[in-house]
Image 1 (tube, rainbow over the protein chains, first blue to last red):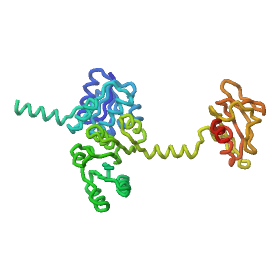
Image 2: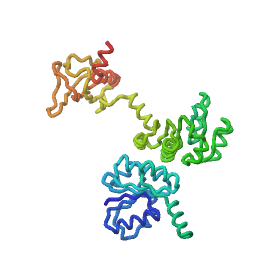
Image 3: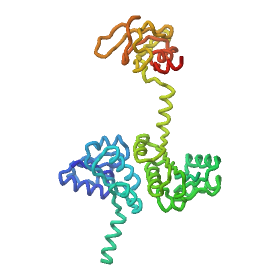
Image 4: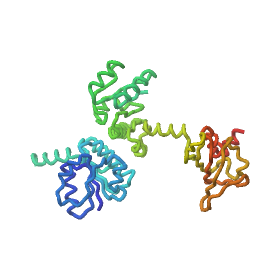
Length: 132
Length: 228
């Protein structure tokens, strides 16, 4: 599988490392070159200084051949813009969007975007631990 | 009309002012307190501080009864999300978004934003409209006098298609020196040469007659007949 990950934060770097170790073709994008230091030296994929909301940068990352696009920047709205572009302009078959705001996450689920809200997920996990 | 505007920067501020003057009911939402204070001071209490991408803020702004929703912040992603929220959560009949990055405009349209405004695309369209140089390319400027050599492509539907070179009403002093036609060696056209769509002509011309030459060779036949 060819996967493009937008955002090389803690989660992005971790996901890139996992997918890479499982022999997937991984390209990870971030505007901050320092963020790539989170990737292990064994990382065989591509790390690009690129803006995932910019068509030119997405094409440079090979979005036209990508099987999956995962948006993991810290900004919900940037993730929403980028994933809708990947889905509707570049026809990427699997698109995942991180949206911290649970209400916004719900709206885009209704609109057919595959989203996940870490806020909601973590809150549920914590509740489960506390109440059982 | 009741119009909700997200973004109270320079564009949002003057839009709100104009719409108020036209008699509309307007509410502006902006994240920045100081922006809201300024608008409220100048235009009356019409600005609420808050995130225009937040459903509860929009609800408070009465977006449910809005006839139109305009997202005019400097951030494309914020404008997109605000409009999608207004459209899909609150069923606002018409949504409009400012698009800063022109390459996002197609996506906004596809996602159902009713009106998109990209200032860069607008300027480009205007330039193209004012300077229709599409069929004329400058090749060389000749030192001598104010002459130049230009290449003109005869477009499909041009008034000169099927005409002999001798019949064309060329501007004074214009000289067609070479005819380039697909899959044929270059030829020097004479008065009997019949032009086809797609022909490339190399023309020596006085700079001032450039526009007249472009019109003579590229004007649409149908338009010409209508004019008569």
